[in-house]
Image (cartoon, rainbow, N blue to C red; front, top):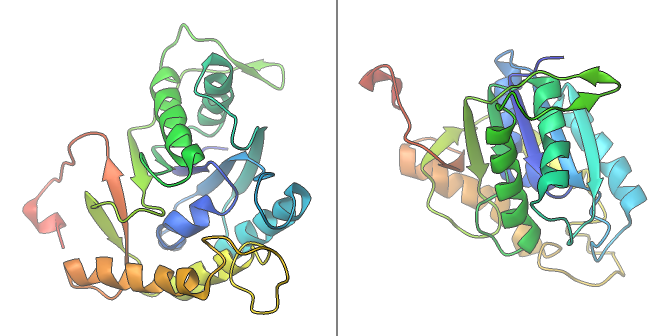
Length: 238
């Protein structure tokens, strides 16, 4: 299956938090989108890997993505080496996306920056014909996505561009709340974490509103880039 967009996250819920609105919008425009989670989030303070599997599947159903896979790398301890790069390359060559979305380059959680660099490096290496990979016994062909964009996570990083997600914020929040073990629940008896507060949940909307304010729309998601953006015409800019 060829996808238009493949979104990677170090943990289940990274993609939903960072770019679910953009994914929902692109799917509404007829694009095929998939998600690949690098780990099962087994080191999360709340819940378990098995519960996160269930929550991730529910979130994927809400978003309407074509596929979701999990590479089951070690949460907190995966590294950017050849073995891990080859696993990501296999996904890139399997789905042949034009666009890859991935974690923030620098963020509070160490896995986010590591995941960002791992996926970015794999996108380049995936285009090299002399790197051989097989999947399900079949030889894969080289494929390099046209662009890699990094979504914004915990830190308020200045975006290089934003996507208008007006009309998609409610569905985005619904996909996030599919991870019931991870976010605000007034009745929960589990330990508090930085993302379980009511303030964090509310911040998802006011960040989107603030990014939207910068470009004259109601809600937006921000991204950073690895190379210069190009447009066919000045009229392409909002």
